[in-house]
Amino acid sequence: MSMREVLSAILLLIGGVFMFVAGIGILRMPDLYTRMSTTTKVATLGVGSTLLAAAIYFGELGITSRALATIAFVLLTAPVAAHMIGRAAYFGGVPLWSGTVVDELSGHYDLRTHALESIRFPDLQAQLPDVQVYRLRIPDTSPVVGQTLAQLDLRQKYDVTLLAIRRDTLMLTNPGGDVQMFADDELILLGSPDSVEGVAELVRSAPREVAET
Image (cartoon, rainbow, N blue to C red; front, side, top):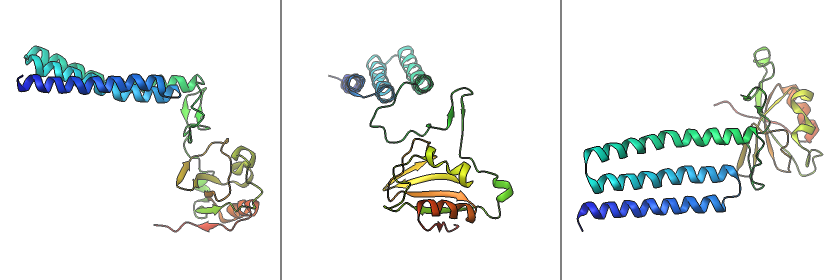
């Protein structure tokens, strides 16, 4: 066998393995989003390896140019297509896997206007001299343990913005209203000292201001 045939065989084998893994992913992944992620990434690599093997084996300019053009087309279009499918599925209410830990879009995507809401800073310009970022740990005996953010309604009741929740090694940014509070959670809040003090009284913990860097 020539070196060209060996390289083609290796690339075909690699492409076949990627395709096989993509097929397993379709059968084994628990929801649409993980199946889509697996098949998009792995199948794209499989197609690329197979076409590259064909280009090397035949060694003709016409075949090589078509193979490279097809590889480029797949690399450019597959991620966009996967994003559009995932977006449509999320809008349509296709459920996430029950073991999903974080849903970054939860509570921040308006299904009517298709607008993504970022972190809101309540009256930030008016309060700018007084607004600070604080860290607030929830003790074991806090009455908020077990409640959701929707029940606490910190923004409306205390005029503070919850930027994130640190839970062990996990950082929940822009948490949605369905997020439940647990003991030892660390709330990262944006607000005036008086507003944050009100939240501190609610959770029965002393606020700690984040030092400026």
